[in-house]
Structure formats: C-alpha cells, structure tokens
Length: 342
Ligand code: FA5
Image (tube, rainbow, N blue to C red; front, side, top):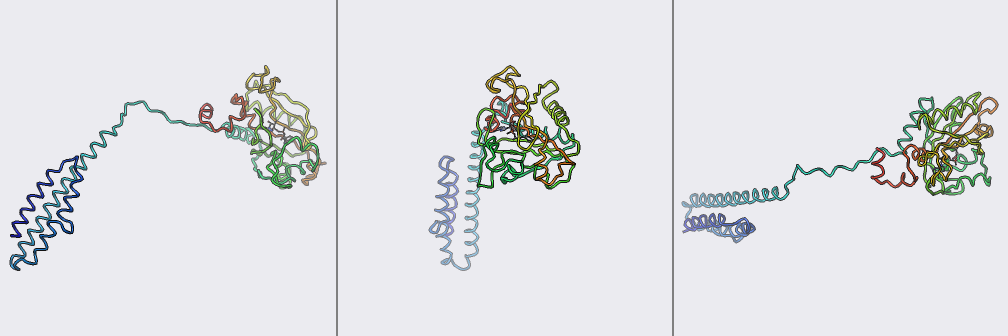
C-alpha cells in the first residue's frame, strides 16, 4: 500500500513540476511545501515507515529515498531552467550598443593658481632661491609689528585684515614670513614663500582669499638695481620677452625705498578697459629695499647686510597668463572654466 502511494506520489509530483510554466514559476515553492513541508505528502508517507513490516523496511526506506531524490532533482532542473531564462531576458533587456558614440569624460586641468605657483617656483629655484612656508593663521607680531607696522599705525588700513582675536589673524601678506626667516637664518640667503593670504576685499581683481609669493634676499651690497633686474628677468621668463613692465615708486613701511610693479592688462593689452580701470596696466606686486629697522628687529646687522623683498599677487599673475577677466572665476570650481585651462 505504502509502496504504491510512494510510486503514485513520485509520478504525479514529477508531472506537476514539469507542467509549471515560466510565468507561474512561483508555484514551484508551493509544490515544495506541499511535498516536503511539515505536513507535506512525502513527510506524511515517510512517517508510515513505523507501521511497515521490519523485513520490508529496507526496501521501503530505499524507495522513500529514491522518491525524494527524484523529486529534488526535478525541482533543481526546473529551477535552473528558469534561472537561465531570467538571465537571458536580463541580458537581452540590458543590451549595450558598443557602436554608440561615447559621451566623453569631463576632465579638468591643473588649476591656474597651482600652475603659476609651479612656474614661479621653477624660475626662482633656478635663480638660487629656496622655497619656504609660513603659517596662514599668524600672529599680529609677524604680520605687522615685525614689518615695522606698529599697532594703531595708519598703514594698517592698507590691508583690511581678518582678526581672530587681538593678537591672532589670518595673514594679510606673505611678508609675515620675512621676519620668521630672518630670525632663523644666517645671511646671506635667498628665499621665496608662496601661499594663501586673506583680506576683506572683493571686486573683479580682489578676492578675500588670494595668493602671494614673497621673495627675500639678504646679503651684503644688495641694491635697487639688483631688485629691478631680477624682477625683470623673472617676469620676462614668466610672461614672455615682449611683456611691458612698469616700475612705480610706492610706499610700504617694511621697505625703503618701495616700488610697485605693473604689467600690461591681459584683456585690452594696454589699450584700457574695465578690468584695468582704463589704465592698460595691472598692478602685480610690491617690492623694495628692506627697511633697516626690519633687519634690526629680526637680529640682523643692518650696517653689514642689506636686503630686497618682493610680494607677487599670484591670482593676478594667473589672470594675466590666462587672460582671465575676473578673479572670481579662479574660485568658482567650475569644470567648464578649468577645462579651458588645459
Ligand atoms: C603687499 O602685500 C606687500 N606685502 C608686498 C611687498 C612685499 C612689498 C615685499 C614690499 C616688499 P600689496 O598690498 O600691494 O603689498 O599686495 C601685493 C599684491 O598682492 C598686489 O600687487 C596684488 O597683485 C595682490 N593683491 C593684494 N590684495 C589682493 C586681493 N584682495 N586679491 C587679489 N590679489 C591681491
């Protein structure tokens, strides 16, 4: 009786599995429960073993195992068949047309300011300068006092400074590294310091964060002629031999005499436009012979040594080199702008 029922269950279940269609493949799970579940048909029949004549048990046991194995194999075949079909459908739907033209990749380029810093360092190192760094969060002493700009001195107004507290500020000029280096080094030496600087300033040629490159040379017998010839060589190497350069007398408390240096405007090439405020030139840097007071404050004998210093505006330099009409473009992080800098 049990043997017949087992045979019948096997034949019917194999057929039932066989008839399951792809669209109703969830039925397979139901059939599984119906056969192998707690109250499933095979589970119930297997429990009938206890009533079988002990001599018959091995034969019936083998039959139960055979039925179980056959049904499991059938399930597995059917499931594999459906899985293969699912995969084919997926591949068909997600087909990639490799002949379609690609959208291309958006790629930036080295940022114009990084590029200028690299170029300036390259030129200056070839001229014998060492590269140094200084803190961006600086003390009032190094930014102002040691640069011969005591508290309440009117020339502090030349640089609208971001103060953190009474004695700490965001450096408004890389000149702050001058006194630090003079205190640390023994003359003669030649250093440059590129870095970020901060002022409460904003228009098409002024940004609250900008970059300067400070240069300082301390030696015996240093003169204004040395400064001018060095700057001329540097600027011609940077902008090209035919660039027009203008030296103007100026004032900085830490240099005496002082000059400012302009180059021809990148937008109008000297004709006069909004960017250069009609002058045809853009101010690029301040420079001068280091004030003996500054040398003495840093512990350098001003009778024996003299020095010259210069402070380039690197954003303006980048604008001139790349004909950029507004300093804000340098800080927008717009990939369309950066792509043009390639
Ligand atoms: C100074 O900062 C002096 N420390 C330069 C110096 C160094 C003089 C050594 C003598 C000896 P000035 O404030 O002019 O100087 O700034 C120097 C350059 O920085 C300017 O010519 C200009 O190119 C750039 N600059 C100044 N303010 C800004 C700003 N807000 N945004 C962009 N560039 C600026």
